[in-house]
Length: 244
Image: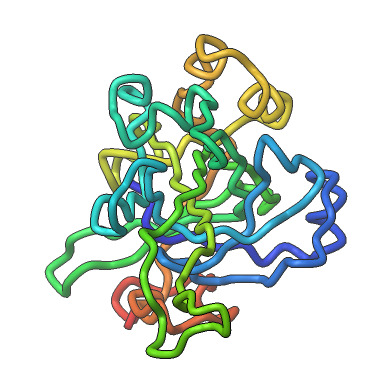
């Protein structure tokens, strides 16, 4: 799975790499579920927009029916929570589709005698990359937000549309399999637009493990375990014996 990642590439390099407006960009050393994080959607391909991590399907009655941080690539067309987004189907005023999730590394944890040890996985050249993602718009059930009412007698209700995303996963490559039995689908640069624009069969063909020879992994501080920690120190390598 992919439950934590980083994106701290300088804004100007990120804008050049993905050819997007980065005005909403905020670097993250410890991106975590439920946070609003930058993605590039199939409907706004020139903008890095912030979307909440933890997909809620369009048809969900409540957030309890969602919160999916990962989606198994092998079952995107058969799992109700992900099918509409993968097949880029809209439902009334709501939209669902595919997205790119920019990152420059992600974290996995390994069981050791001293507890779970976090590792950072990144490209060997530390350049940013795109993980395959899905996104949806979800409309919360109409609920009253206060006891007051408007002058015309109508209730004050919550009507905002919530946008959420999930990261697609696949089998691990030879490097990641020592850390976890799943990994995020990392797209080759030349395949990113195919993921956003291509047919279902083309998109399915991209759901392969990323080549391990261009990647690296190393242990990092256990401070990354706490999602409230977000600093450059989290991506620095540590000795395993002193990884706390």
